[in-house]
Image 1 (cartoon, one colour):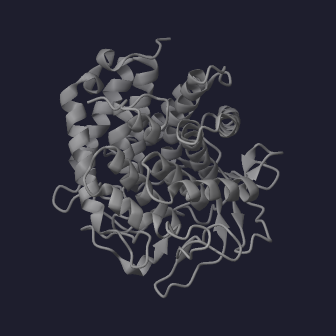
Image 2 (spheres, rainbow, N blue to C red):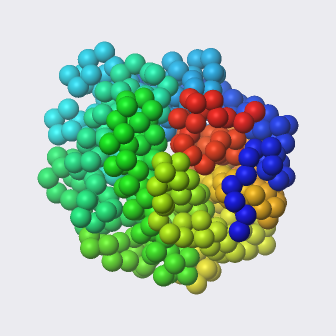
Amino acid sequence: MSGPVSGQQLPGWLGQPTHRAWLDEHCRDLLAFGQLFPAEGGGAAWLDEVGDPDPSHGVQTWITARMAHVYSLGHLLGVPGAGTLADEALAGLWDAERGADGEAPLRDGAHGGWFSKLDESGTPADGKACYDHAFVVLASSTATAAGRAGAQELFREALAVYEERFWDEAAGMPVDTWDTSFSSLDDYRGINGAMHSVEASLAASDVLADVLGDDEGSARWRRRALAVLAKVAAWSRDNGWRVPEHFDSSWTVQLEYNADKKADPFKPYGATIGHGLEWSRLLLHGDATARAAGEEPPAGLVEASRALFARAVEDGWDVDGLPGFVYTTDWSGTPVVRDRMHWVPAEATAAAAALVLATGEQQYADSYALWWDHVADVVLDHEDGSWHHQLDERNRPSGTVWPGKADLYHAVGATLVPRLPLAPSQATAVRWGLLRG
């Protein structure tokens, strides 16, 4: 097997400065598209097809955190105005002037943590989710790396809430959903929240060491991410390299979960093609992170990454008459939901880029170019900007699951992964000047 290669040696488009310049320009175009997101009082509004706020979706914590993350990255990238926009999103999560004594709209001052959303009237939704809190950890770590006001305090609180409420040390995995008061824990356990917990934990580990000088805390969060990666790799290996998505409280796989809600936006039935690709990439980040820390990673992470990638591509890409990735399949690989979600080719290009970085192999460079051509052909909105968030099975814009263009997280990530090393994580790598131009 080939090993990691330098930017100058990368095959295909990843080795070309002209392509990296295009990625940089596209990243800045995306940040320009999303600049109207700030919601009154703080936080991020859901964006419609042309980038205007759509108040019908309220103000949601995961959207707010994602926008705080990407605009903090924008500030680190030297995009004028991005830092101020990051602060607008962060204001929905934390009062930078008053800290823990302040009343940020999405923060629950009575019970701790963050509400999942506020509706149009400002009323909080019931329940608190791992998925949302993982994104608060990610956003606050990126904002801390970017030096935004109040970000370190938010980061420390986000870590404390996640550690107390969502991390199950005995299981070595996160729990998923609490009621609002953190008094009743749902029996459901899910891979989606765990996946974003890995991303957040790797980012937090880097920022803890680099900005806060907390090497012990950094190691703790890194070990957690690696433990989750090893478990998911094993579960996937035992399931034909299709990632099991849903579990009960004992972490027993529930393969038929949501068989009656096949297109659920967060908990769809069956195998989610994009998650296979996303886990493929995260396994490589985890492996590289451990090695950068002088540690031996769990065995077989790179091999598992290859296998997950191969299975997702075989099951999901160009399998129903037109180019594109189907959303989900059953456990034999037959498509279930054939619509195409924008985040899947974003993760496909990122996973292919990560495999090029890890192996130097031309096959992954070829897939990378193929899928960017597909994105440019039907996913990019060349008239109104950003990416169509959903296409139907004929590659026509649709909005049955993801109306509008809610946020920029996946698309911006797709412009950064090909230009950064596998470790450290994005904010720390940009802060260290490791972005390849």
